[in-house]
Image (cartoon, rainbow, N blue to C red; front, side, top):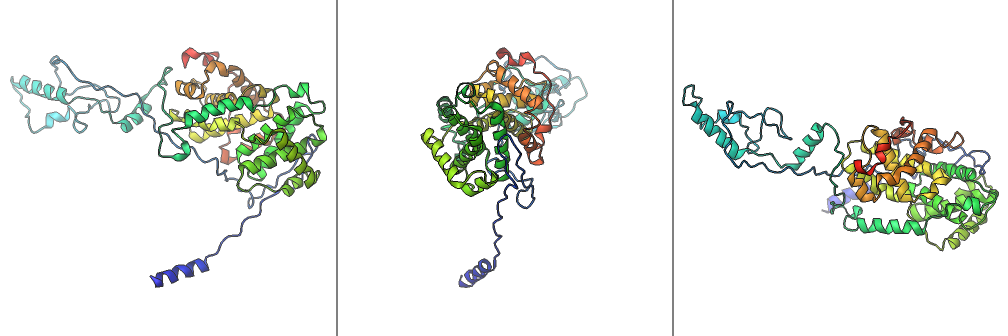
Length: 447
């Protein structure tokens, strides 16, 4: 034991540890409405294939298809001329029927209990074969095999489907299967209390307009990408900005200062290693000093009464993506990235503040599914149950997001589109979108 310990000690002492890579920084900053910040696109500091630790591939859920009832014959069947049945099971090929899951009725003719008799007494053999087949004939209830075969042979999706249980995984503590429903109801209640005003630009702000707000958010997207911040940090930053602007008039010279202060707060709340105050000063090209950023940070915290936990579209989107993937055959990552792209585009649009975050997230799922499969109804009973939104309730928001996706936020706001044209996001920003959505998709009776 002492000898092995000495060997391990020598290995630990001789191990070389890689020095931490210094975080990349922006080459230059910009003020809102003026010049644009340029991010350092260095492969050593920001690999193109890197994906946030919080944005791992979604877990696959096991889907249980509708249970097929066992077939039990109650009466003697009519005589048949051929002992090999042509009945087709949902889980077997067209030329066999499950008999005790090991033998078909065709195989029963090769059973050692019977011999082929080519005379007039063959009717007794056929009758015996038929009785044996009827005793053992059944459709397998093996769910795994049945699920695969059911999906493969289904000619088209059903318009009226069953609600799948997405909270049945009690082994993974991160899914919170027992509390998932209560957590969702709490978030739905909290989003009404911590939602910004929908008309602060018209009623309060005199020197700031929606276009300036969009430019600020577009720049913050670049900052979040440069420092590899998790998506929740970006969504919370926008929430803090809008809530602060809902009750405080601000001039355009201090709008960028508000943006970096809100991102500093959100990063402290969400990130493991948040950027320092000096880094936020640097990305503004030292337009603001450290004391100014800290002063604005204190002003935001005091106005929001330190209520930093706020439901965002990203909170709801995580759950809705899991629900959508339960019975969906679309590629999991394509659906997730496309829904994230649509939801981030909504951050730029001031008019979309009139919709609660949960509705925006549900509409993003609706539009993403429609873009991936335009001929298939994007909504189903499972999504309606877990989101608590009918397809008719999503109509206005989906159409607004559809216009935003097709037209784009504008050539002066390219950050989000450039972000989702990368390989690590499956180039979802380049996906073509049909010019219109069929009106029947918004009728509740068809989903």
